[in-house]
Amino acid sequence: MIQHHLPILQILVPLLAAPVCMFIRHPQVVWVWTLAIVWLCLPMSVALLLQVLDQGVIVYELGDWAAPWGIEYRVDSLNAFILVIVTMIASVVVPYGRTLVDSEIPASRIYLFYAMFLLCMTGLLGIAITGDAFNLFVFLEISSLSTYVLVSLGKDRRALTAAYRYLIMGTIGATFYIIGVGLLYMATGSLNIVDLGKLVPAMADHRTIQAALAFLTVGLALKAALFPLHMWLPNAYAFAPSVVTVFLAATATKVAVYAFIRVIFGIFGDIDVLALLPVRYLLMLLAVAAMFAGSAVAIYQNDAKRLLAYSSIAQIGYMILGISMDSVTGVAAGIVHLFNHALMKGGLFMALGAILYKTGSVDLRDMTGMGRRMPFTMAAFVVGGLSLIGVPLTAGFVSKWYLIQAALEAGWWPLAVLIVLSSLLAVIYVWRIVEIAYFQPGGQLPKIYDRAPLKLLIPMWVLTGATIYFGIDATTTMDIAYTAAKTLVPGGAP
Amino acid sequence: MSLDFPGLFNYWLIIILMMIGFYIVIAHGNLVKKIVGLNVFQVSVFLLYITMGKVEGGTAPILADGIEVYSNPLPHVLILTAIVVGVATTALGLALVVRIKETYTTIEEDEIDAMENQG
Image (tube, rainbow over the protein chains, first blue to last red):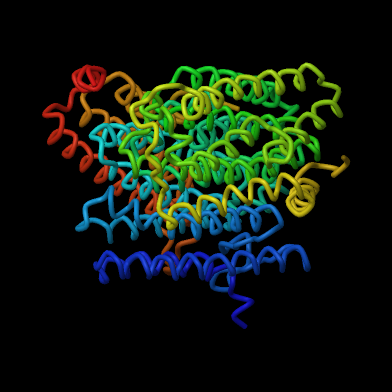
């Protein structure tokens, strides 16, 4: 019985838990409450994933109104995977966050922070699980609005302007998205994604449909921070509280990329949209531009958080590149990179959070000798950095391997060269930090041994360990990604 | 497809409003004006939905004797949700502007940029 209602419970539990935070108010109790909720959500999403892999798509009709009239939640192997990513990251971030939240956010506001955190998670899970295009917009705004609040809680006053700019850009993106959904509804009279996928191909050459595609693409690209619509991201990541940065970097843009996949392949999948308009080449071009521009700008950053933020922009480029190839291998590579990048960026930002907690700065110039001062934290950072580059035995290698394979399969060998070249840029920015932390002589703090508290180290190493684990044994993740990609790409041929 | 002027009057208005709003968001340096521009932009989309739901000669979708043609209520309901989202966004945006005013003592974008670049 309860099994049958899992899809809705996945959303309802965190949604209802958020206002409860407002009544609890006590900082420590609220933390325990949030922890209980996210640890309850994780097994739910894992159960959903196992059930989907076992029995195929789960359809849940809200209030028993049959689709396309009612809203349906539709769980397939792709969004079950996304649900697991979000809940998994959340269940590591909350135990990690306690110390940092206490140190970065005034005690009187902590309960508000956790309420917003739960709402943000609800929104992200909702985007993933819903099968209704307009419902997706509502969840998109739930997650975005709570994200603006979370970003603005940063200590630096620039967090406020970062949140404001994010709000303007995010709202424009979301509004573009509803214009697109409106145009689709005008032409087809349906809002259900599966139903749209059946109705749209018949009117593929209709101007309204093409305009809808343009609006949806731009709107979601803004949310996913695809180059050149990424301007909100670096400041938002750099000035948000450390915990928020970890959570956002690991989940928010990933879920937007998921929504993008859903629109491109779910709604427009059957009409080979990537060929209909020059959308495919446009996306590919932007993805490559993102890979290079993001990495190149990252090299010149002095603030480690900003450096990683720009690197995120480059990594989103890799995901979109995989999707734009429109082949099973390409899309699978994009999906698996979504997961791997969540692990490594989560681990990397957690390491920076620990450094910020101990030293009060993540400026590269203050990180001299950090390798000796905080060895365990820096070791986690190095593993994450290697994974960003794509060194074998790390998760990043797996995604790049499949990405290059997809490029070669399609005969686009220059793309494969570009992927390798952009990885070399990653070597430079990762090396900059490693050199300062380990090899720079002098430094005023040579002998201090300043280990981060275990409360920070354990979650950090859980994610870092997962980065290594999924780099060595990628069969589980690749299987899921391939299953998902096969259902998405028309024809399903490899 | 006919795009003759009076036939699609609403849509012309929507596009004009949309562009005015979008222009204000991009061009104005005053943070409050930006929010207002964003509002105009969003309202134009609300009008788009309301217009598409209208059926010529139809009335409000309430069951009554002698009425055969109804407007489509679904876009109207959808836009109720979007209006709520819009109100929340505006409120949050203005709250942020208040906080920015408190910490920066100004709400002009160029002055804030200058302060941020100084460090």
